[in-house]
Length: 258
Image (tube, rainbow, N blue to C red):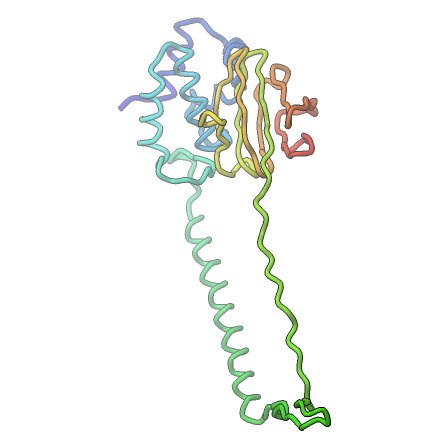
């Protein structure tokens, strides 16, 4: 076992690199680089982002990024967990948070049980004194023409079955004029990873200059771009300008800030 932060900091200092220089070369914000070296993972936006930054920074320093990912998983994060909640080192975990959450859940369950009991008792009490009027039986009387006629004619409306239509897909083409990190997810930034038509996971992906990635989508795509000036986005063959910022929501009709 080794210290993640110390190993990164020592490698950077041996190369004589400053935080601004690292940010310029890797497109990772300097405050995130500093957080990696201090193992202050609560500053970073989640496990997926943290591991992407960690691998990229270690490789940039000439270290084995996979070793740093394995050490991070063994000490801070269970990779089998699918959520992307913030990661806190042991020294940063809040004491008593789990107990408070458990108490809130128990109180909510007790309230639901109490309301359900009251509804059940009120229905039972009213049912003993109520009677239900049934509709009169349907009878037929002979008609002068010889055919039966109904004194209480009832018609049954025709049932219409509605079959949901399959969601239409649209194409999102991402082109890189320069190196840039992208973090693309379906629906929201915490949603499932967006993948390209070539099955590339784009949830934490470093695009190089001249590279493209195409997504077939049915709903919105939430995307964060490290260097927006290097990225061009086309929707169904039409190029759309990126609004100011780094976080965007792509739909079949356009792009807006997220």
